[in-house]
Length: 209
Image (cartoon, rainbow, N blue to C red; front, side, top):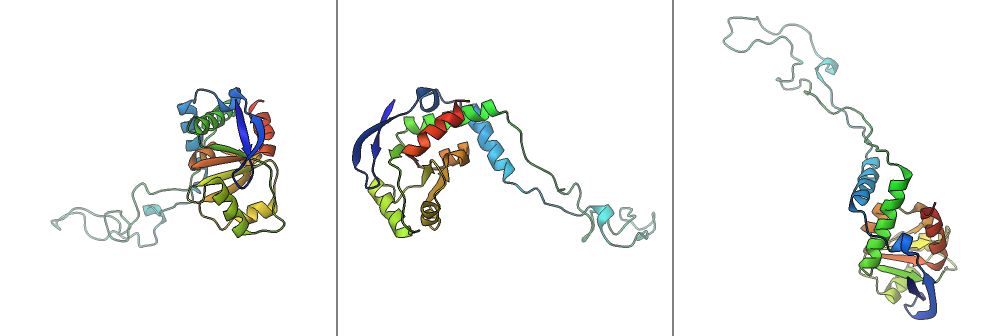
């Protein structure tokens, strides 16, 4: 499919870019998308949670009362979970939440995410642009020109551009990444996906292996 290329003011440049149907026009695989997003979110978890169980609590090991004749339940240790200050039963322990998915499934998930954005008409292609110096104001003007000032947007660059990245860093609803940093979650989390001309070839190359 062919998509027109806009400039940063939102005007048509008269050029078009070819988006391969094998990457941007497939039937989305919702289960692959689910698994990839699940992996991304799981990998964000630190897994450093910890609670002390009864064996780790500091306290006396003396039997706190006689076994029989008290009229209450027997009790052998002040560190028992049934007492205030005792250990926690089956408390959380440090663990890793990371998941492993094969590369072909992750590529399918990203293709599906791109295809979803195309079907929703939320994918825009703009010409390559740069700023002479970091400027949040200039980036806001780009958003206004593209009609994205009130939408969550993700800009995908062909290569790292420090000035463009720094210009967007203070904006809550805008983010800038390179094509090699893209994830299925990032694509779907953005209301509008903005690809620069220079990023399209890299995306196709990464997903056509």
